[in-house]
Length: 481
Image (cartoon, rainbow, N blue to C red; front, side, top):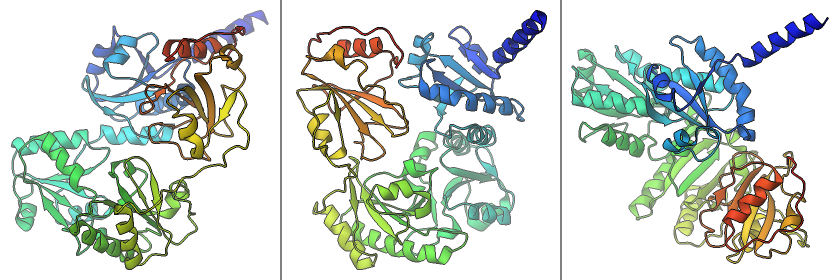
């Protein structure tokens, strides 16, 4: 029996130790990634909750991508042991994922965090960045596959522009679509040689914008990338979960039944009217960005305008500071233009999603809602440690170390339900719980707490960063929060 248990333990240890994720250290980092065409690297900390949640998904993706043709290795770096290496690549939060190509940093990884999504994203990264086109039928079919614009290179032979095009396409493959051809028949038909041309999707054809835009700049990958960013979305682009971060603010968004498969005519009916007003506003000196989006894909965004995805159409503006302005009238071109005019003149009151302000807020941990956020968190006389939580998440701060800090009137410990209140744009809350430090002397740039989760970790953090001397009360025994 003892022998069986021993063997079982050995098998368990072997299985537990086996991993398809490569462990990287400063000593082997450069040599390992230099051997690979592409590598995804996770920079993590062992205590990080988000890292622990990612670990099984990352491991599963590594196993699958190891069998890919060509293989795509996944690696990780423990930043608590390799702080200099993590600092070299600007890692400030965990987990941070970055893509390396042939030993050099290529781009931040901004894809999904579950195994299936990681696999799909990295398979796309490992393939060609630009699709080779041989016939006009092939080009037409490729353009119709997406509502996203495609940048097409026409090159009879390799030259400086073709090199810059392929280089820029490689670095922007996750956000833009690219194709290229060297076929004489295609170059003759479209009249382009040694050229890069934006082709808008035939699905979005409109008299309010050009279907093609030719690049007229230098043979520079940086200039090309600037051209892609400025032109790809058009006058009113179709916003999806994949490209939503590309839209600049102030952004006017129209949420309705956007569907280019089942209802392209109905979709363009409203899009064309939005574009017409957009051109009129632009001609009048009002510079805004515009997007249309399927309301069923953005229920949370719609709720942030005080509306519901069951509404026929929801229109709102989101400005650079994160403020939101909702159009209350039903859609018509006249109402839409009036709404935009009032917004541009500063006549609209922003919509704020907030729970009611607590009738009593005298407890050791202050309850923050959107309506009293400025009063409590942005008090210029207080250092504030605030926890953003969801009802389903574990709240870390309550009653754990507040006794040690009693008597320090300049320090406030606070909590906020981030699912029920608007969170200011300077606070990046992607998971729960998320903790920030807002010192009295720097409310514009709060610092995300990335330390340990023990009582002593929080207390030491506050002592080191407080704008005034911290006096400690009776210490609690060391315990995990």
